[in-house]
Image (cartoon, rainbow, N blue to C red; front, side):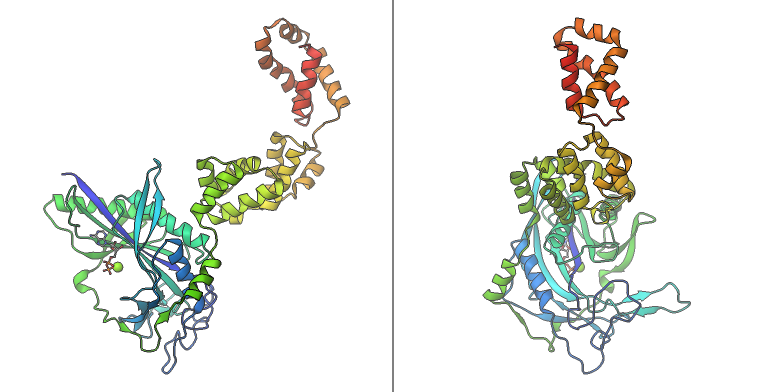
Length: 481
Ligand code: ADP
Ligand code: MG
């Protein structure tokens, strides 16, 4: 039997507002427990929520980015359930009338195949608090700092057919929300959380199979692994004569498996109803226009622009726009150094390798864009060769100063003085009469290769500092061509 996998994702992305969605408390990560929860977040009697305008702007921005229908009127509802980290006894969310309706994104697979994935909806809601189990013996601590943090829940159509496609889609959404500046996308801190709905069906069957929902996935790598584990589990189960039950399963990264958390039968009836404390959200044309005018450049648009403006290949443009931080970095280096080609080579080459080695993101690079551009300027004006530049880069990386400071301190300036180079050329020619003879008697087309021997000797003598173009020119002149 051939099986087909069907996947739909629910992504909760934390919006990068300074304050909460219905209160003025700050949203900063990592504060002492319960220092960022005010009366509204604590659900004291008599308090009223006031909607954060910025959160609405961000949701609309996302709607524009995925070419979705943005609702002129959306409604907040109460989702009722009991849990210690939810003092109100309900979460304010949107159900019937979400702010963002049907949209779509394009994903590109490794083999270049382009696929469109539908986004069903995206709605605004508040986050709950957090239960703390460590550090408490026989008790659970409750931290309400996160209560009321604005979230945008983005629900996809069941359009993905493999774990790889699901990851490509999640990465695309991550790229969009970070590019348009509505979320920091930090997965470790929980600012971007993916729940995966997975089912299988016999190939060719129209009707969808019974799905399970996988939770507790905090990286793209785990997303792929959790889905693949679940696909196998479901197929094995069905082939052994069993059936999949609709349930929520928790992914355990340590064991690389999913296990049952709660079945649909045990699931809550949330008794949604419109929140009487909040008015419907009405978005008029002026609001839409203002958001559109403020819209940052989208990743796909930037990629196309990089190709055209900097004459980059599609592959290079894709790498250099993978994250907004990378694109910003590259673009700054290209502008300041005045050479996009060298900038691209260094950002994708030396810099990427160094970052990779230390497992750092480009935001944490010890060599910033200005500093790297400073180094590339010195290659361009022939102060140093490309080879010496790698040595300078290493020193800059370990904090030894700017390119100019390192070049100066280590005496790495390229030798461009013709007299000095000529002396070196003469020395090497005089020391190697046999090679000179061989060269002169060789076929002209063999000579370019043979000249490498002399260049090597001279570069060695100059500790790599002689200008290679000048060395070549002088050698050719002296050896007689
Ligand atoms: P709920 O409200 O119970 O979470 P939804 O109908 O809103 O259910 O679906 C949630 C997610 O599950 C969506 O991303 C949707 O695409 C996906 N989904 C629905 N049915 C299936 C299925 N049979 N297999 C895989 N994914 C599914
Ligand atoms: Mg769900």
